[in-house]
Amino acid sequence: MDNSSANTTLEKYPQQIGVGTCIISERARRYVNDVLDSARLTYGPFSQAFEKKFAEAHNCKFAVLMNSGTSALRVSIAALKEKHGWQDGDEILIPAITFICDVNVITSNGLTPVFVDVDPLRFSMDPALVASKLTSRSRAIMPTHLCGLPANMEALMKLACERDLRVIEDACEAAFARYNDKPVGSFGDIGCYSTYQAHIVATGVGGLALTNDPETAVLLRSLANHGRDGIYIQIDDDKGKTKQELEQIVSKRFTFIRPGFSFRVTELEAAIGLAQLEDGMEPDLLRRQQNAAALTKRLERHASILQLPTVPADSSHVFMMYPLVVRPGSGVSRDELVNFLEEYNIETRKLLPILDQPFIIKRYGDLAARYPVADSLNKGAFYIGSHSGIGEEEIEYIGKVFDIFFASRKLATT
Image: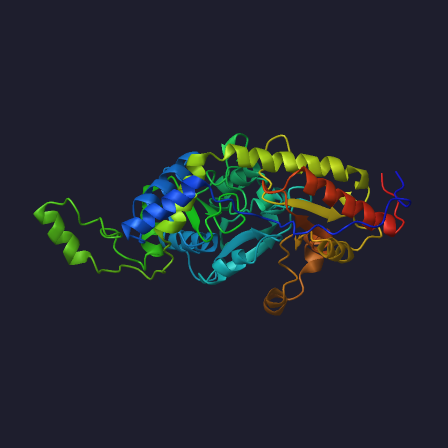
């Protein structure tokens, strides 16, 4: 189809079509008011209920609520480092396309990130390349489930088992996504999620670390609370105890047994998160998937220029965002396209480039040539919104803006 004769004018949408949203329900408002009425903002019943329900939804026994997904990842690495006796300088493998926090949480724990190029369709760590990156100091792999699409966990878990590697899943963008009908975050030693604004579950700030191992769960909670002795983490831990139990708690209540962090969050965030889970996630997830399908249908006329999202048969995609790639050699500039979209009030983001970040280049050098897929994505990939706050009108508008951009440049699309 040749769009060169298409209408090249369009009235700008009155408000920005963002990459994410947060919808506060009546239940959430009621729960927040319940917290305010209780005058208790510290870890309590809403936090405990949110942890329990989130863990159950992801087939895990334990969840530890924190102030961000980044904190969950940082604490998870610290917990496994202590548990398994890792030494400073030991290595964790991460994908060459991911959020910058994955490098930060590794280096802040005294460890070394090792990049692995990515699958060009999933955008996650390519299992076929992992073995070539392993050394005598490799201790773990940290796959990222990017944009809401699971990594190839079957192949990655097989490698981890064969090489005795720990697995920390960065599922911050993929809550409720499933691989072979199993929730992401439940495959490895620990799964980490974000509830930051615009994520699948959005509480403003927040994150969770999930595990099935009780010892790891104790470590996670201690580390997130300054390294405190697990005998006393919250203000209810000394209630309903025998005289002997109370004396023991009082003697250890201000005891810190390891270096830790202050990564706590309030009951307000937990109340919002719990309300979302109790309201039910299915309508939101379905709407995201429907919006993604509608965007794909609307944009498939430009498939010769744009690589549209792939949903492998083994995975469900929750579409935290809708990723696109300008095909190499198409004659289209990704940056020119995203600037055009932004002019028309369609918010965009680059697809989490990491190797070309200034501080990465300063610390590790120019790595682009070693990671050709990531380098290509850094030049051509971006994403737009597909969340449940977007409707049919916005999707049609988005499609028209893409049409106008290609038509104005007299690019033939099919």
